Image (cartoon, rainbow, N blue to C red; front, side, top):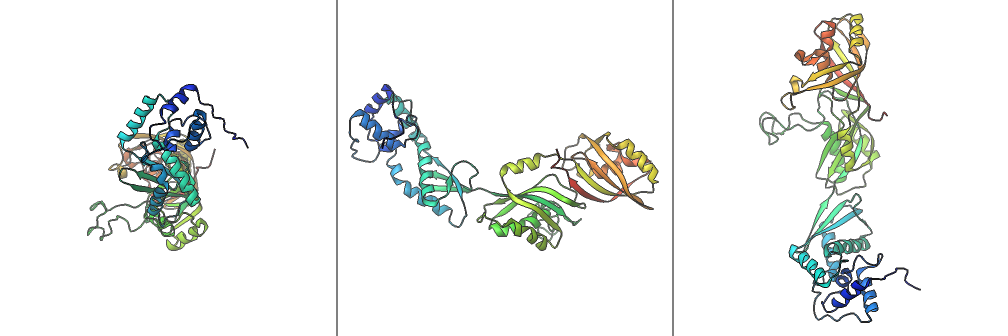
Length: 411
């Protein structure tokens, strides 16, 4: 059978190949001098073709390869070193890298100049590829840059492999049914998480959070070291998140187990949180999902309980004026200590009264992303203009706030 790979190097390449015969190179490093010729050939196969074209036999070496010191003949050693570093971790995809002495790489490029070859492949590139192929053959895992579970880095100078276990990502939606928990862990302001008398040694401002209640069962199932919570915005601590829930991505750091039963985790989160948090639509995600969730700016719908003795007719008149109109919101007083003080333009998309009582009324409103609803209702000392209290001419107070929907799937 004829070999389907065509290998027809130009005359200058053959001249360089003849000059390299006495360089004491192994087949890998000899063929690597012409690594960009003959697509589909391994470097040893490329070397064999060149020797045939030159009418010579493989050069006899009296010692280790002068380029790699027989590194490519010891790939099995590096496979073993790599596998030892990830014992106990589940992984299916990987990529390889290596750290080399700069002098060795510079010496290699000098040799290319001496021989007059412009087709060389670097030792680092070849080692990473061949080491990856050996790992694939040994484990059945898939090598390549596409969403690896682990990155192997060979430090050739010290003979050590440094693994990086990449995070596991889970995406879903959460409902927060408790008005006393924040979305994410809040370190104690006094001790900054170290533990003090103010926080009872916990290091936290609040006993728990959505982040912790969702993360704990996932942490246990994955055998991971920690989780990081990324939400599509956040609601106030005293606001519930209802409806379909708020989109989030949970980043699971250094997981030992990657094949999680996400269908079983949803009821476990509800059970272990005593019904304070529920999750839906759990599915595998990626680092790109984190960026998408953090950068999204969807409109949101709310139910707002407002306290204030205002005739409903007057409220309806005010809502007609407010709906669709631009409002200017200066950074609210309650968050001014942690956010830049500036005026942000926002818009009330729609608003209607859904319930009335002697002490007040209930609204359902839809707003642009980033609208501070409480401040729009109350006015915040004039920091939001126009505001509902100003439009009805009566001081108003928000009694409760629920997020009904995050409109991230529209359009």
